[in-house]
Image (cartoon, rainbow, N blue to C red):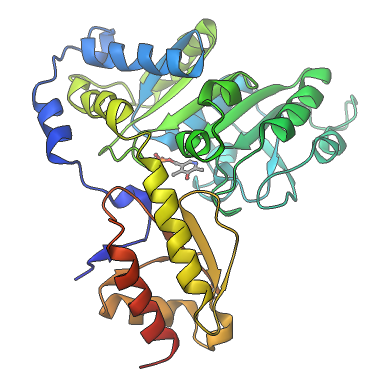
Amino acid sequence: MIEIDLYSDTQTRPSKPMREAMAKAEVGDEQQGSDPTVNALNERVADLLGKEDALFLPSGTMCNQIALLVHCRPGEEVICDRTAHIVTSEGGGGAALASVMFNTVDGERGIFTAAQAEAAIRPDSRYAPRSKLVEVEQTNNRGGGSVWPLEKLRAVTAVARKHKLSLHMDGARLMNAQVASGVKAREFAKEVDTVWLDLTKGLACPLGAVLAGPKDFIAECWRWKQRMGGSMRQAGIVAAAGLYALDHNIDRLAQDHANAKALAKGLAEIPGIAVEPVETNLVFFDISGTGIKGRDFNAALMKLGVRVSLNDDRRLRALTHLDIPASAIPKALDAFRRVAMRN
Ligand SMILES: *Cc1c(COP(=O)(O)O)cnc(C)c1O
């Protein structure tokens, strides 16, 4: 049995008080815009992110895909880091649905510079795809849970604005960026046209994500939500979890970050393990020095009740979250030690 699940921050189960909030939710027909709890959540997120309007969607992936569909025409190009979730982990949706091209940039821990973004912009020529959108991930997932510093983000957005490109932020873990940096989410969000928050990552809800942006943009997103089957009915029952999470689960992310740092510190002391810098709740580490392959390492860990995820055969990822108390870290480290030392 997996006792300490560091696979992802998506592995949380809704807490008792969250379930109580869900049970009490007032509901209506979300598809017709008459679910009061969903409407309250949309208003709340629009306000939190300083945007005119917001739209509740079943997942973060749907937020990204609908944003691509509304921002871009087929054949247009999106500039983003090569590690971006929108490129690596959405089933090729950018090509299959919005028919966009990705022009990926080789950032540092997923964070690229204004010069790199500018160099990726195509000339205005009938031969070239039209550069349309710059996409940034805050925090960046595969880059290491890294936080875009406001200054670097501003430099990139200035270049995009200069060339009249639109800007989209994948804010799956935007609240982690707020807590880690002390910069308000709306300050980051101000730099982009559209931005979304995932409710199922550190915020620990069972499902849902909220996409925010200008009023006319969100109106167009509604059409795609309907078209793709993302319109719901009494969705207030899950939106209530989102409202509960915004009240109770943001500031506590600091605990996840502290646990991640403690985990990283312990891992770094194990021979054969090299740990990447930790900024938020993601801990990436290279186990090649142990001589054990990633898959085998995780299989051995799982026998000891601990699970992580594999980036590749040498790079593993552990995430901390609401269901990982501080007391689980020494226990997890003990399992890592035993596997690395093969005893
Ligand atoms: C998890 C994640 C997504 C997708 O969100 P889902 O709600 O799982 O569809 C998108 N971007 C990033 C950076 C993520 O970590």
